[in-house]
Each structure stands twice: as structure tokens, then as C-alpha cells.
Length: 259
Image (tube, rainbow, N blue to C red):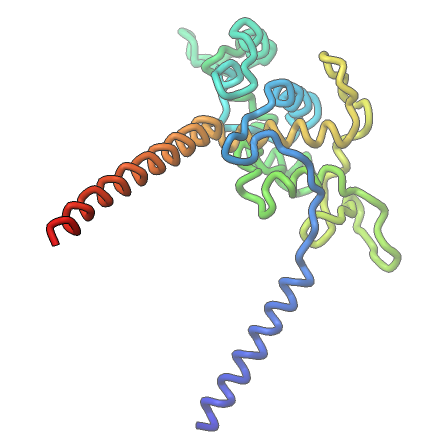
């Protein structure tokens, strides 16, 4: 009995400690209105196109998106660039191909069927160019991080000077939303670093929201279709429930009349 009591005390201690640790590590992320949230949520096409621009001009030099093809940029449910615009985007990149008839590799302009061009040839090259850190692929980054879009959105705006008493190694930066508050990536965004074609003010907050929206679409390209299917399923269940209710009511009314 004494052993059981001690075991309960030990488990209670560790449970309480875990709860306190979780509470201490909980972070309140920045919030914003996401157009794709909710049952009727849809992606903002303008935000997706601006987000792609931010990714291309700011992020793509380090971060890959290996699961996306250039044709996805013109597909329904995504940024919905025109096919001509998507072809022009693809053609602006040089893609390694081959071998040719002489057995040699060559480069050519990209096509819609090509995957997004990788910034580095391999993992080692990426680590060597980034002080030993490997820039993660951004295709499903939103799904791979706790906090999802709110985390990415907050991280991009969370750079600040470290508190007193906190020392950082060379090449390490302080970010209040990063796990452990230390990150090797320098602040990627600054006001006006991108010039939006639609005239939108390219503030850090705006660019953070746009590129995060783009990353959400990359991770869930069929989100809108899923929302539509969910809505149809709910309507179908409501109608079915009403029909079943009136059917049962009619059946039981007959039983009562016979009695």
C-alpha cells in the first residue's frame, strides 16, 4: 500500500511538472484575419500572387519548394496566374536536363511541368552556404510546425534585440517566437524589400501575411475543394436528418392510432 502511495505521489509530481513546463513554453502568436479559415474560407488570389513574389524574391535563394510545379501556379484553387504568365515564370528559370544525344547534361528554360528549381544542388551544399544549418523545404512547412500559419506569420515579425543577459553566438539571431528564441536565419523581411505590382504597401506585416498565405496554399492546395465538400456533406446530413425525423414521426403515428 505504501509503495502504491509513493508511486501515485511520484506520478503526480511529474504530471504537475509537465503541465507547468507546457504552460511556461506556451507562446501567444500574433493574430490576423486569414481568408481561408472557417467553413467557407477561400484563398485570396491577390495575396497568393503577392506571396509567390515574396517567396521568389526573398525566400527562394535558400528555401526549396520541391513538391510544387510551375503548372500549379495557374491551376484553379491556387494563385491562378494566367497560363501565359505561368509559362513566362517557368521560362525565367534555368533547369538542368539531359543527357542529350552526346551523353551530356545541359540547361534549358523551365517548362510548366518542371518542379520549382532547387536553390542548392544537395543538402551539404545548402549547409555549407548557411553556416551548417539546413534551410528547410517550405512545401509543407506550415503543417510541419506547431502553431501553423500563426507561427510562421509571427516568426517573420519576431526579430528583436536579445534581452539583457542573453548572449548569442556569431550568426545567431534572437526571435521571440522561435523555439528557444535563437535562430540562424537573419530577418528576411524589411519594409519595401519587395515592390508589389498591384501597388500594395510592402510592409513587413503585409509581406508576412502574403507569403504565409502562399505557404498555406502550398501545404493544402485542395483546401477550398475540401471546404466545399464539407459544406455539401453538412447540408446532406441536415436534409437526411429531417427526412428521417418526419418518416419516423409518420411511422409512430400509425402505431399509436392502432393502439
